[in-house]
Image (cartoon, rainbow, N blue to C red; front, side):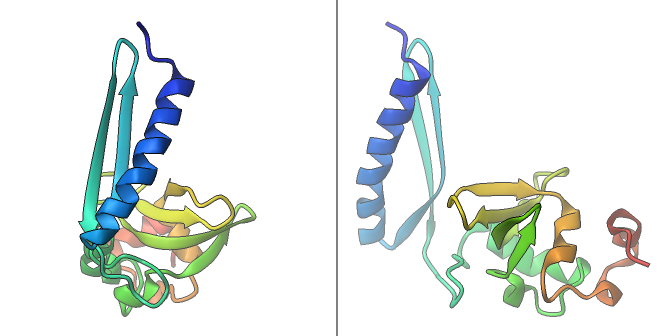
Length: 148
């Protein structure tokens, strides 16, 4: 029997709903949910400890922790304060969640406030954030960001 895409999405949605309550009970939050389907069905759930800041960002997530380490070189005097910053890209409102150091083309992680989905964005998106300071950008990034 083959598992269709629709069936896999329905199963994943049900499992996620059940897992959320269990994770919250243990002060954890699902950060990545992956599923595979075809001849069978497989699901993988990664969870992070919960340490929510005032703007609703989980500071214990891998992306947030990496951002606090590298954010100064991207033009932020206090990288932790940029977490949760809201900005508009292509007419859509986003909330900044952190930085994925394994993604060279789309390292910024942000949540679309309209649909609640998490997206990966290019480095150039940092210029849209309210606390971005072009003078604080590291020299090697200035050409990539187009900052003079």
